[in-house]
Image (cartoon, rainbow, N blue to C red):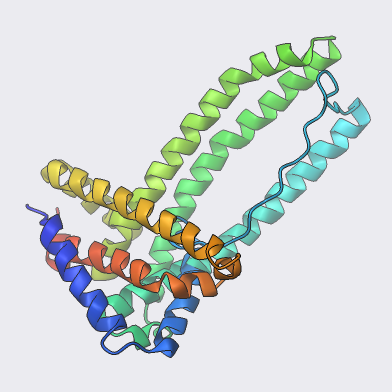
Length: 290
């Protein structure tokens, strides 16, 4: 099986021109901005607007604020509660994001930008399967990271209680940081494959998440070279979107970084990204994978 990435990019560019610029309608771009904003809950690499976070002040050398045992117990309890609350909230946002992502795919597939805000119920089956795909990746990562973080905190507190210096504690935490980085990297790669391969297969076929993953692996096995070219093209596109996002945000004194406004200004790139994906992973490609 051959994936013609170059031809797909040309078709996606023409589809973007036809949908957003022939004619150019501000109301249509605003509709897309709303959908792309909600889709950014699960697809932050493409058009997730926001504000910069102030840097926390650094403690002076040798003055790391280590908690005492009673404080440490409360901190552990507070951290566990915050983690559970954030996880529930994050999963709720992800569910909404998956619906919005499939609604965006539907509008792109029909080449009708005005369809973006419709079909909330119609995309329910592929959106729910997409949500399960993301949830498995995230929960698997959390299942590895939470015990690792707990063990790292236990190690750090134990070394501090024994009188070890801050430098010694930090050196002891290096292996934990390396393993955590590897887990996070694997989770990012898996999430990328969900966005680039599993999502369009789910949209075309309406199959289960497991079936979409099976077909993704089949595509990698049978067309590894073309898949590699597609992945590199997606990475390059992400870089372009990142540069455009920075220009839009800071070139407008952060006004362009506001939610929805940001995605509206980036609508052509965000539309092209999804059109490109659907032109590479076509219904025929998805259906013939075994």
